[in-house]
Image (cartoon, rainbow, N blue to C red; front, side, top):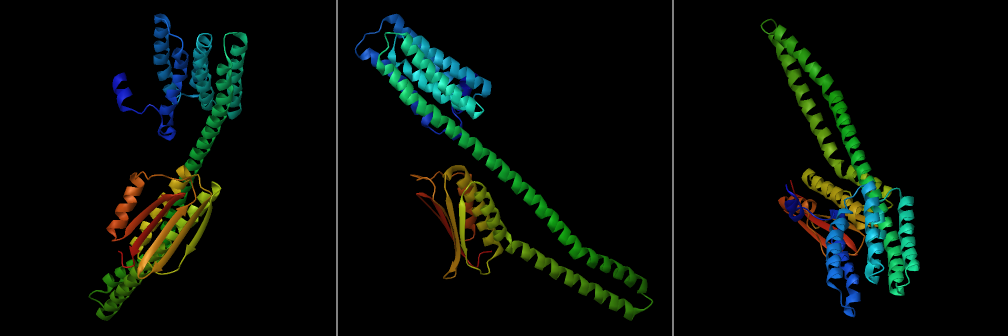
Length: 365
């Protein structure tokens, strides 16, 4: 893939940044204020265009920059501000951009020190140059400082959330391994003795064949009874595993949310439910908890399960940020397909947080 195709086909900013970085580019319009009452010369106009064309790739590259490159991006952005400050008071926007770029520097104390350095440089430039009006210094300090601090706080929160999600995935992976080992041990204890008994009786029946027909018939009958008992025990064990699925997922969700400071309140009505319906609700709860941890910024989550008028009603709601719309990603689409396959319905309500409510028939299978 060449550079042109990469620019056209790949996103210019990471998915977590959203669309806001594209809007911030319009802050470069501060450079044009001067020319509402001062006509620029051809040379100044040329340098202005070249500066904007050079700065925009640098600005978008800063979102993908590593630690060392973030420092370089901050330094180059400040250089644009220093060069243009004596000629255009709108150059204060470069110091605002530089303060926001400091969020890519780690650890956090170095990022705050970088913001202080950017603001200090802007003040120094203003003091050294007698031509700069107050309209240069005020945006540099009054806007640059809050932007830098907010960007660092947001980056710190995002890194913490990513670490939390990685730890959650590790915990889920270890829990899956432990559950598989437990099932293996249970099946070994459950079937080991019975299968050994069946093997011995089959060998004995083979030896008695043709010698003692009555004893051989008795051994074969014992083999049949042992096999039926083993099959019944396996069915009971599998049913027990299925029925513990939602309870296990609910405990896992409570632990995951608690580690993020989110309180889970559950109101679960005890009743017998089909294994397929329970599996769909377990997967929905897992997907909902993942979305809450990633996007909701919630402090509380409410889970309600009840059987009403012959139908199962399962509701998951959080008190996260207000949502104006819903993006149906793979998780919600898959959830919708699973619910529909059982003859149920999934309702998603966006408001002060997100509420998922599914209705399933008790006879789902």
